[in-house]
Image (cartoon, rainbow, N blue to C red; front, side, top):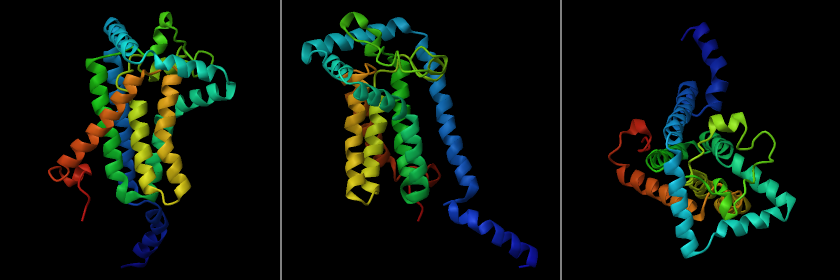
Length: 259
């Protein structure tokens, strides 16, 4: 090896040590993530075209819940309205539990538990794809769109990140109640990180994370409890399907760990 080649190798080695599989793999993971976000926007556009069906499906959930348990979400919403800090905490959790927490979790797993990254990533993405299929086929209006039943939009006074702001209208799917991907992703992140973390208190936090998110999405009138159950079912179905197909899937998809 020549002197120039040796110097180049020496200069690149610190970056190589920081990146588990180099810059190319990191770029691939970023492309996969933003590719999914693009798919989400396409499905959002499809769901927006059938508002009548979305409201009809929302009414079906309301009638079902009233006959089974009553509108449990109203109890949670009334609870958060009695304490300002609790209302703020639930609002912030709703906005950040999805892309912020999920994104940071993926970054942490990629750099700190890289051997677990592909399975973690595939579980999240596949569960979300299943959820997007549900949004396209069965759009459903969330509780906050039914004020006649007592629901209120808890995010209405939440600064620039309320449902009427231009940013939220551009990025969010208004008829994405069933299943709750907030609930599905919280379950996946909570379970995965609880197993990956070593300290008992961090495990305890991540074990409690899904339940807190489920509380928040209902208390802010963004999801029915039936949506939460649907999200958990989606997460479980994605896990089972991926496990069953692991041996048959090509290693390039990340479903089979390299030797």
